[in-house]
Image (tube, rainbow, N blue to C red; front, side):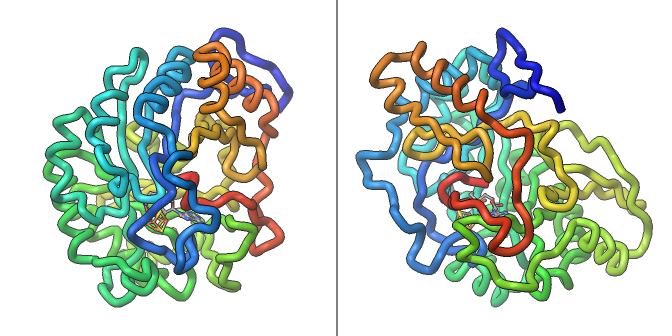
Length: 336
Ligand code: SAM
Ligand code: SF4
């Protein structure tokens, strides 16, 4: 890619327009997925006063939406752990320019909250699901409850179409469940998506030999279900980095493969962590403090800080398998 800045919209120095914001509303979580957080939770947890208020989040989203952000995904930690999330949804769907507010969740507690979130304007959910076996599920989440998550998924599918079920592919853990997870998702009208594990947290959560490529997952899928897979444009709902394939049985399946099937040249996203730091890339150490900018200079300063961090965004990440290719950032703070 050659650097060709785009004017008028929020874009990075390589001309990639930013239309999608992942907004982490908390760095806390009721689960402790082994690939995401240590048993005691994230190091350097944000003190309460460091977490963006809803009003600050709304104002920052307003600035980003004025520059082209159209879709906001609430994430965490676990977004449902943030008290009053419905109020934030209500505020964000009213922000001029924002076309859709959606959420990525572990699904615990979702069944009881979904009606209120949907009434507030939430437009869709993705739910993480790494195993259909209760004991395994508990092992990978350390404290998860599969039945509770299934209730959340059922509630989500009753309310929204095309619910995504996100599975981190882990060799020797859930590679024997690829076909079963697809069948489960398709029977509910969901879209299963398999994510390649990204080494985060300086590689401290890495388990050697567990990395599984998207190609290996596809091979496993065909081994489990037979038939064929054909590349497919998907249903246009994702707006993200997943690449879709259609199984000859009719089901759609997505793959998010940052390590083996790079998608950096079409990157359209930024991430705002729960303290208001804007990250242009999951991998690089690049954050700009938009909360401080808001306090110091209002909308103009926020826009300038966002443009500055984007102008420094490298063309691609440097993730690689194992600790050598790890990012110092924490996935549990950035929200995926
Ligand atoms: N708690 C919510 C959840 O689990 O969906 C939202 C935050 S979580 C960090 C967002 C997504 O990131 C989840 O689908 C999770 O499986 C995924 N994830 C976490 N750590 C990851 C890693 N190291 N590599 C790839 N995906 C990861
Ligand atoms: Fe929590 Fe989601 Fe991380 Fe699991 S992946 S520990 S549910 S933030």
